[in-house]
Image (cartoon, rainbow, N blue to C red; front, side, top):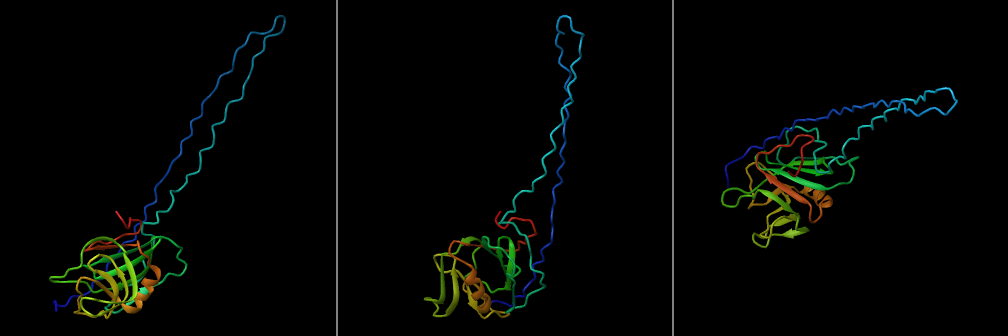
Amino acid sequence: MPAPRRALAAKLILALATPAIAAVATVAATGAAHRPAAVGAAPRTAKMPARRAPAPAPAVPPPADPLAVKRILPIGPIRFGEYAWDAKGVPDGPLIVTVDLAAQTLSVFRGGYEIGATAILYGADDKPTPLGTFPILMKDADHVSATYGAPMPYTLRLTADGVSVHGTEVAWGYATHGCIGVPTAFARLLFREAKPGDKVIITRGRTLATGEALIG
């Protein structure tokens, strides 16, 4: 069993950048046209009204990026076995799961809004959890490991060789054989939201700020 590890809270800094847009209108002055007066008529001067410059178009903000962080759940450090989940009022959108092995945390984003977070277990020693971006390949609510004979409830498989996100007992000092273990109650919520093809991004030590792209 690997040496005990302490869960670290990933603190994300709210950094909203609002671009300033200035519109400048140029007014073009147009002179009078000169035509010869008719024979026997008194000379006249044609006077034309000055043209109005068109009103500047209102600034239109760019469409919101569904793959950028829009909200982080206002929670503090999460202890082993604990989790947070709040999807109330969050619109539908792409589901992206981020995992930070250094902080031992997993976050679930829907349309850029964080709806769930929990402390995790991960692989160590000769069976480390791989880094990278992985699509969910398969879902199995009642999966049992063919290699270890252990139940892996609410499995979301990420790799062909079996690395998955699944429910388990999450306690200090525990590790996995490369999988990402989350509390079973949290795994059930994630299983309900996720579908094959959704992305799971596994990093080590990367934090995200509001407005930053989830997939860079």
